[in-house]
Every structure is written in C-alpha cells, then in structure tokens.
Image 1 (cartoon, rainbow, N blue to C red):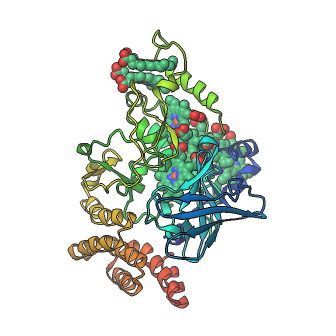
Image 2 (spheres, protein in one colour; image 1 turned 90 degrees about the vertical axis):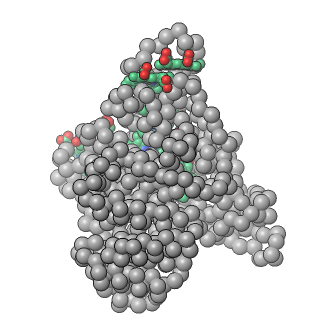
Image 3 (cartoon, rainbow, N blue to C red; image 1 turned 30 degrees about the vertical axis):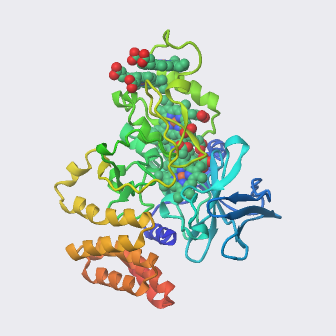
Length: 482
Ligand code: HEC
Ligand code: HEC
Ligand code: HEC
Ligand code: HEC
Ligand code: HEC
Ligand code: HEC
Ligand code: HEC
C-alpha cells in the first residue's frame, strides 16, 4: 500500500522540488525549523543517527509471553524477539526508519520488498523513557512484525515523496506547496504563504495532518474519488481532497481525547467558534521554531487576553494550566497531550481502551461542514463514498475478508463504478488473491472512462510487477501517466 501511494504521488505532475533547496535562500528559517518535532518526525537510519534508547535492555510483554531486546551494534539498530511458547527461534529485525521525533514517542520501521513494516514495540518519552508495545499491539495475539505501515502514517509524518525516495521529515513544501517555480523566480506570488490565505484555508494547511476524528473506530477520513493519497495542496479546500467522518452524536463520543486532537478539540471551543479567524493555529504557534513550553504558554496568555480580562478568579498559574490541561490520550497509552478544547471545566479522562470492542454505530460527515449539501448537485459523489468507506473501514481494522465481501456487494450494486473495483482489487491484493485482483482491475480498465483510471493502471502495474511480468508492468505504468 505504501509503495502504491508513492507511485501514485510520483505520477502526478507535481511542481515539487524537495525542500533542501529552500535553505539556499531562507537559511535562518531552515536552520530554526530543523530543530522542531515536525522536521524530525521521519528519518532514515544512516550513519550518525543516534538512538540511545537501543540500550540492550530486554523487556517482557506478559500478554504475548514475548521478550524484546533493542540492540545497537555499531550504529546498526535492531530489535530481537524471543518467544516462550511455540519454541520459535529468536528473530531479529533491523530498523531502517524512525517515525516520530521522540518528543513524545518513536515508532520504528523495517523496509521489505513490499513496503514498510511497523515494529510491535515503540519507545515512549514519559518518565525518562521506556519501551512498550506499539498502539494496538498490547494483546496476546498481536501482529508481531507483520503489520504494514499504511499510507496515512507517512502522509502525516513525512515530506512529499520525490521519485521513489522518501523524504526525511515534514518539510517546507507540505505547508507551502510545490516550490519548483518559486525556487527559480523567487517571487512572492509563486509560493503559498499560509498567512495570506483565508482563515479557513490557512487552518486547513495544519488540519491536513492535525485533524483526526478517530484513529481506531473507523476510517476517519476518506479520499475523494480520484484523489491520490499525497495530492492535497496547501491553499485548496481540504474537503476537495478528503471527507472526514465522525461518531454520530448518539454514540456519546464527542468528548473523546486522542493523540491527534488539537484541531478537533480546538474546533469544539466556544472561544474558537466565536471568532475562528482569531484563533487559528498560528495565533499561538510559530511552526518554524522549536518553542519551549514557557514561550508557547506566554503567547497563549496574550491571545486569551485579547478577548478575556484577567480577573479575580485567576489566583496563580497560567490560563493553560486550567483551561488547556495536559491529559492522557485514550488511543495511545503512555502519551499525554494538550487538550485544545478551551473549556470551563476539565474534561473527564477515560482510561486507555486498547482492546475496546469495535465501534458498530453510525458515522456522520464531520468535515467539510457542508459536504453533503455541496455534493447534492452531483448525486454520484456522496453515493460513491458510501460504497467504499465501509469496506475501507473494515480493511483498516484488518478484517480483509469482510472488506472484500463489502466491496463485492457494492460492485454487484454498481458494477459501472470503477472506484469500487479498484478498492476491491486493493483488498484482494492484501489477501494475496492476485488473480482475482487482476481481474477486477482489468474489468475496471475495460469499463472506466480513461480519466478515472490512473489508480487502476498504477495498481495493475504494481500487481504485474509482483507477478513477474515486467513488460506488462511498464506498460501499465506508462498508461497511468497521461
Ligand atoms: C533563489 C532563492 C529562493 C529559493 C531557492 C526559495 N525562495 Fe522563498 N523567497 C525568496 C525571496 C527573495 C522571497 C521574498 C520575495 C519578496 O519579498 O519579494 C521569498 C519568499 C518566500 C515566501 C513568502 C511569500 C509571501 O507571499 O510572503 C515563502 C513562504 C517562501 N519564500 C518559501 C520558500 C520555500 C518553501 C522554498 C523551497 C521550496 C523557497 N522559498 C525557495 C527566495 C527564494
Ligand atoms: C505533514 C503533516 C503536518 C502538517 C502539514 C502540519 N503538522 Fe504539525 N505536526 C505533525 C506531526 C506528525 C507532529 C508530531 C511530530 C513529532 O514530534 O514526531 C506535529 C507537531 C506539531 C507541533 C508540536 C511541536 C513540533 O515542533 O513538532 C506543533 C505546535 C504543530 N505541529 C503545529 C502545526 C501547525 C500550526 C501547522 C500548520 C501551519 C502544522 N503543524 C502543520 C504533522 C503536521
Ligand atoms: C492524521 C495524521 C496522522 C496519522 C494518520 C498518524 N499520525 Fe502519528 N501523529 C500525528 C500528529 C499530528 C502527532 C503529534 C500529535 C500532537 O502533538 O498533538 C503524531 C504523533 C505521533 C507519534 C509521537 C511523536 C512525538 O514524539 O511527538 C508517533 C510515534 C506517531 N504519531 C506514530 C504514528 C504511526 C506509527 C502512525 C500510523 C499507524 C501514525 N502516527 C499516524 C499525526 C498523524
Ligand atoms: C508546518 C507548516 C510549515 C512548515 C513545515 C514550514 N512553514 Fe514556512 N510558514 C508557515 C506558516 C503558517 C507561515 C505564515 C506565518 C504567519 O502566520 O505569519 C509561514 C511563513 C513562511 C515565510 C514567510 C516569512 C516569514 O518568516 O513568515 C517563509 C519565507 C517561509 N515560511 C519559509 C519556510 C521554509 C523555507 C520552510 C522549510 C525550511 C518552511 N517555511 C516550513 C508554515 C510552515
Ligand atoms: C490558544 C492558543 C493555542 C492555539 C490556538 C493552538 N494551540 Fe497548540 N498548543 C498550545 C499550547 C499552550 C500548547 C502546549 C505547549 C507545550 O506544552 O509546549 C500546545 C501544544 C500543541 C502541540 C504539541 C503537542 C501537545 O498536545 O502538547 C501541537 C501538536 C499543537 N499544539 C498543535 C496545534 C494545532 C494544529 C492548532 C490549530 C488547530 C493549535 N495547536 C492551536 C496553544 C494553542
Ligand atoms: C477571539 C476571542 C477569544 C479568545 C482569543 C479566547 N476566548 Fe475564551 N471565549 C470567547 C467567547 C466569545 C466565549 C463564549 C462566551 C459566552 O458564550 O458566554 C469564550 C468562552 C470561554 C470560556 C468558557 C467556556 C465554556 O465552555 O463555557 C473559557 C473558560 C474561556 N473562554 C477561556 C479562554 C482562554 C483560557 C483563552 C486562551 C487560551 C481564551 N478563552 C481565548 C472568546 C475568546
Ligand atoms: C487555577 C485555575 C484557573 C486558572 C489559572 C485560570 N482559570 Fe479561568 N476558570 C477556572 C475555573 C475553575 C472556571 C470556572 C468557574 C465557574 O464555572 O464558576 C474558570 C472560568 C473562566 C472563564 C469563564 C468565565 C465565565 O464567567 O463564563 C473564563 C473566560 C476564564 N476562566 C478565563 C481565564 C483566563 C483568560 C485565564 C488566564 C489569564 C484563566 N481563566 C486562568 C480556573 C482557572
């Protein structure tokens, strides 16, 4: 899936140049930005990368009766797993990439021919730092070293991929858009500056990664038909790129607090709702700088003071301590985050619910707020979303068979919709049912309008490549390029 995303990104006519060149003319910003968590959120393990948490100390995961040892052998990092039941020999997996700056936590990735595998163990910075299971792995039957990293992790944690090369951290172009033209002409009009966008478009630049309605219960955001995973461009309406779903009101989950929650929670505040243009993310954050907590708190107090008077109820402490407290997140145990919902009372913190029963209730459109209304003149759009999102949610939960059944049902109902077949084929690929996947893609290509077939050609190319048909793969990749 990751490889598919990269290839799709590649195929688009991008105008991206990679952000290394920006430093030539914006040296001070580049230097200051490089110290932020965002800039350090994804790294290849290369000589010189220091990961002191690989200290050779073993930790035992009781639930699965497995022992994990993070090792550092002259700058080569790996994790060894030993298993007490089943009599399997120890298994050692090298670390190729690090995801997460470690300000709160770090996850590790191993590269295989098919994509990136997420390690079952992560390192958490709290209390001086310790190893524990990665989110979703703290269970007896966890997936071990077999879970593929999904496109979405990379979309939120890294720069735009160029050629087949992954970027090394979130970079300038993720917020400023493609910079090839600007790097040549160096004019103010050839690059996006979020400060000059409308407040709505500006906050969406951040929301592309900081808005998540739920990380666990269902697929919180679904790409619009025809949009490739990395194709959002700063300045365009985020809702043209993807639609967000949320728990229906009756689920009583409106007060949830997850790791990626700043935008979702801020958008619930009465302060924000009263004047969204004054409380965008950049009111309190200068993203080019790794600010200390004291600095951000001081900026925040000035922002509060622009609307509220400091009155008798504030005896000591900062507005942030009481109205934007740091709290434990529900989806990632071991991580505390700032609750961006500015409220009168502190919300109740629910204990982490790792093994919670899957959510089976209704979901509703969350963003853009008028999604259904705008989509009305083109009845196709909302219907298509209905056809693919349930299957995608199942696929995301790892329930491949049910996802395939859902997509098949949708194909039966609307055999002419290419998008469903592309989804079905993707699920079949996950199930390693390559011939059936190939059939679906070929059928999609037979029926679909050529303009809707980029993903189908691309995925068929990947599939043929996996099946050893290099010439066929090259042909499909070429067709995917128009
Ligand atoms: C060849 C030098 C050069 C390179 C390379 C360059 N810039 Fe610039 N950039 C400039 C200059 C000069 C200005 C200011 C223009 C002015 O004030 O008239 C500018 C302005 C900007 C602005 C502000 C625009 C505005 O409307 O206020 C942004 C944002 C920006 N650059 C981002 C980038 C990014 C991102 C990259 C890398 C993709 C980059 N620049 C590469 C020279 C460069
Ligand atoms: C490409 C995805 C992406 C975009 C776009 C993005 N962020 Fe982030 N942001 C992240 C991730 C991921 C982290 C956590 C990084 C880490 O520590 O590993 C983060 C961390 C932060 C932090 C914590 C401090 C730091 O330096 O890491 C702040 C503050 C922040 N983002 C604000 C913003 C604002 C404001 C915007 C919009 C102008 C924005 N972000 C746009 C993904 C993004
Ligand atoms: C919707 C965007 C998004 C997705 C998808 C996403 N993350 Fe994140 N992640 C973030 C943001 C934003 C933060 C920082 C949260 C904050 O500081 O408020 C973060 C924080 C983290 C951190 C802690 C970084 C630090 O030290 O602060 C780790 C580790 C992490 N994510 C791993 C992952 C993995 C692994 C996946 C895929 C399974 C993933 N994330 C999916 C946006 C995302
Ligand atoms: C996380 C999003 C994000 C990233 C990454 C980012 N910027 Fe910015 N940048 C912004 C925002 C937001 C503004 C507008 C700030 C404001 O409101 O004044 C901005 C403004 C600018 C400006 C206008 C002048 C100024 O100082 O405000 C320049 C130049 C610029 N950025 C260059 C860069 C370069 C070069 C990089 C990479 C090294 C980069 N930015 C990375 C979000 C980002
Ligand atoms: C009213 C001020 C304010 C606004 C507006 C604001 N933040 Fe924050 N944010 C803070 C404060 C205060 C902190 C805590 C800083 C610290 O502990 O270093 C923080 C922390 C963060 C962090 C670090 C992780 C965490 O949860 O502690 C991220 C990421 C972040 N904000 C993202 C955003 C994004 C994205 C937006 C816009 C949707 C936003 N913030 C809007 C005040 C604000
Ligand atoms: C743009 C103006 C604005 C800013 C900035 C702002 N607020 Fe507010 N705030 C409001 C408005 C308007 C209300 C709603 C008042 C009402 O409905 O009675 C409100 C309500 C509140 C409430 C009551 C919330 C509730 O749920 O009843 C608290 C507490 C609060 N603000 C604290 C803060 C703090 C702390 C900050 C800084 C982090 C802040 N506000 C920033 C305008 C603002
Ligand atoms: C020690 C904790 C604490 C600190 C510090 C604090 N507050 Fe409050 N604040 C509260 C509590 C508790 C309430 C709810 C009072 C109530 O409901 O009677 C409240 C209520 C409010 C309200 C709603 C008042 C109303 O009548 O609707 C606003 C606005 C507010 N605070 C703003 C601020 C600002 C701005 C700061 C920073 C200058 C701040 N607070 C600092 C605890 C605090």
